[in-house]
Amino acid sequence: MPPCLDIAVTAERSPETALSQDEALLLAILRKLQPISAEGLVVALRKNPACGASGEGARSHRQIDALIVRELAEQAILREAGKRPMLVCSPKGRGALRDWALAIRHADILPADPVQTKLLAFDLLSFSEQADWLDKAETIAETQLDGLRAASEDYSPYGALSSTAEARDSLEARLNWLRALKFDLVRNRERTG
Image 1 (cartoon, one colour):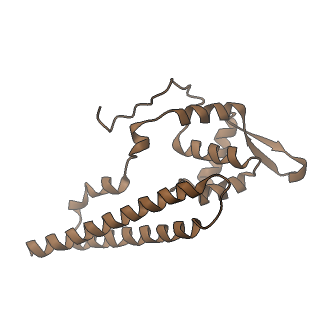
Image 2 (spheres, rainbow, N blue to C red):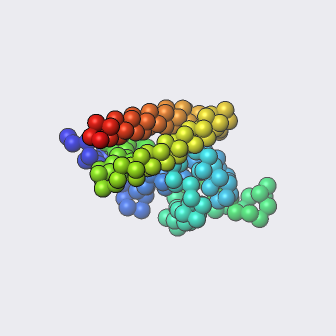
């Protein structure tokens, strides 16, 4: 079976409970930290290494609102929280999250890689643009890696230590790969003059 096929190994999920990766991440963190305010959930999302680019504030708030509308999350006013609404994962949300966790797809094991996709168009860039792009990518990877190294010393109630180690290992491998690409770029330039 080609690895690009996206086949879920689970029963069909209804559209109202099917979760995207970002929704599942939000719901999983909510379930672990509940009750929590929407703002607290967004902060926890940003700190989670599995987040990637999902932790954008406005987008996260829209996703939280969508989870509430779909009845996968609920708002509750708790006495100890004052009048501030707190979020909890609903029974329907737990079921959707369970279904999502049971599904295993090829894309879960080797997700789409935007960096490798960009490299398919690398020949459209000049040598200097390619070198600059690789330098920027390396700087971004180093910055993310430094952040993960600092975060790995923090304790997290939702098990981020193992995901932090995996994210760190992935970034270290990505950094080594980018450096090898840059080396090959320069070596090929020297060969072709």
